[in-house]
Length: 106
Image 1 (cartoon, one colour):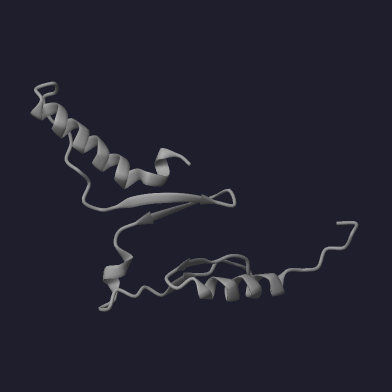
Image 2 (cartoon, rainbow, N blue to C red; image 1 turned 90 degrees about the vertical axis):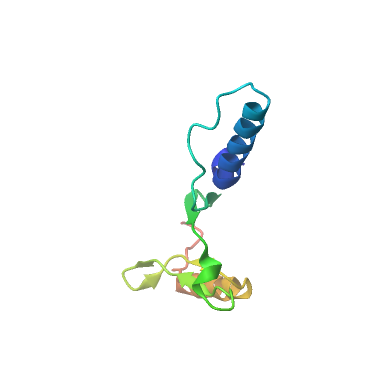
């Protein structure tokens, strides 16, 4: 795990630390304001996946149901899923079904 996976938490932690140091007279105060938009990232299968903003406020009930599907020509090669976990398994099967079989010789 890297600090990049917790960017928003790290930024908030720095601000809290600077506020405490300022209150104790140990620092002049926070140099920059806290960013207003949350940012985090995750590394999955050697891919960096940044997440920015508030996806749950896009719908009235807060239920996000979004899939991003990258294709290589007409073949589905991946997916990023936001929302219900169950759909991830069906996407995995869909991607697996499109794979070309590889023999023992590779």
